[in-house]
Image (cartoon, rainbow, N blue to C red; front, side, top):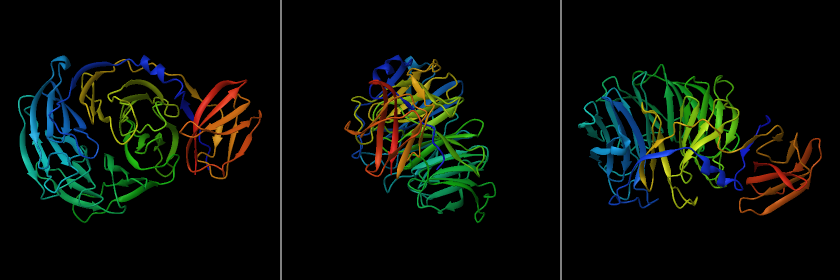
Length: 447
């Protein structure tokens, strides 16, 4: 297995350093009359944003429908429109949004009465106009993504694993392809017909849809990635502006974010894994890359911002914790993020506490010390043995996520090899000490 270069936050013992984050709350909205879902008590779900008519619009989903806010002057933000949905109430968990050519597309993942809604948004912030509200194409979809360069909408987990629609007539989508080569596509990112498909427990697929323009055309598979470090439920991802880096989240408690080098689709590799550094059960949800920054809605840990200008060494540079109390059970906290407003303000949706507008313009200075490890821990994940080299210490300790010490071994200055056979499968924390002083912390996975 290729050596995995690990770097980790000084987590657990250094969480107090997160108070240095430089973010400012500009506006917060939460309507206590909106009912929470019966699943996770989330009154709210996805966030989206618009730059339109010299105004900035925040769009947030709830169990009631879709809320539109004029956030051009954040401190004076107001709800300017609301659209009820075909299915509402405590059965709603997910809604999703994407806009194209003056229209907003809205889907829901629950309810037999749900519909695809298409809204004319060209008159915002004054008004909206619903031009399509029907389940003729599909009733439910988990997520949608629109490739604006080719006018195609990708509806994930709708009638099939994923359906592709032409938007050449934006108010009247036309089905052109149904993708069922995997059992499930949770989310998709598509640019110029190249689709990165996050397929849950079946990993990542990369497809070329350039030849798919009418029904019956077939796409071409360009790449797959099924086995990779810290692999779990492959949830979502985002492509960098230059198309060489893909940031990917596995939606499992305690699993790391992955940075993939996708500059050569015949040889995709994971070049970094990292996390929020808050808790052993932290879980990333949705991430968006803008420039050199990766914005991640990190569920219980709120919004986390990472500098990925060196993709081999991401550095956390800002945060805003939207969820309190900060326990890590179930699925709660920051759901989505939108960083593309012209002002630079950041929109965040929290499942339990609603809409946030943040000023994070000073996301440039690392706010925790990160050790970019000069040694290798390999293989990681480990099965039979694991090796440690290039360290600065005389003692290795390994803890499970309950905090119990499960291993303590003396270290040599040259390569050290240890058995992994006695460890149960899971994620563990290691600590290297020198004369009793901690010199490094990190994570190792045993299979």
